[in-house]
Image 1 (cartoon, one colour):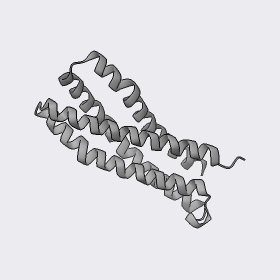
Image 2: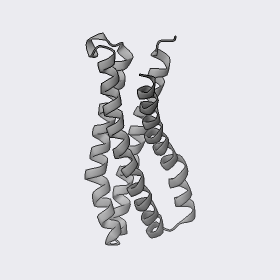
Image 3: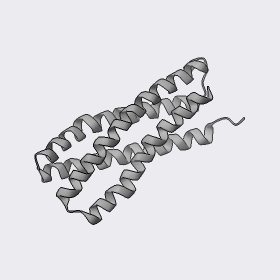
Length: 151
C-alpha cells in the first residue's frame, strides 16, 4: 500500500507544484522579459508540455486513489479526510478538463494564427482557473496533512 501512496503523492506534487511554478515563477518572469507575442508563444509551448504530464498525473491519481480507497474497505470505511480529498480532487479534475478543452485548445489555435489579443484574453481565464485549482490543491494537501492519522 505504501507504494501506491508514494505514487499518488508524486502525482499530486507534479500537478500542484507545476501550477505553483507556472503561476508564481514562469508567468511573472515571462511578463517581465518578453513582449506579448513571444510571451504567449512561450506560455503555449510550456503549457502544452505541462498539460501532457498533468493528463498522466490525473490518470495516476484516479487509479491510485480509488485503489487505496478499495484497500481501506471502500468509502464506507474511510475517514472524513479521504472523502474530502476525493471530492476536492474530482472538482480540480473537472476544472482542469474545462481549462484544457474550453481555454487551452482555443488559446493554442489563437497563438498558432498569431491572434495575440484573443490569445491574451484567454490567457487571463487560464491564469484564473490555474489560481483556483492551485488554491484547491493547497487546501487539499493541508486538509490531508492536518487530518491524516499518525502512526
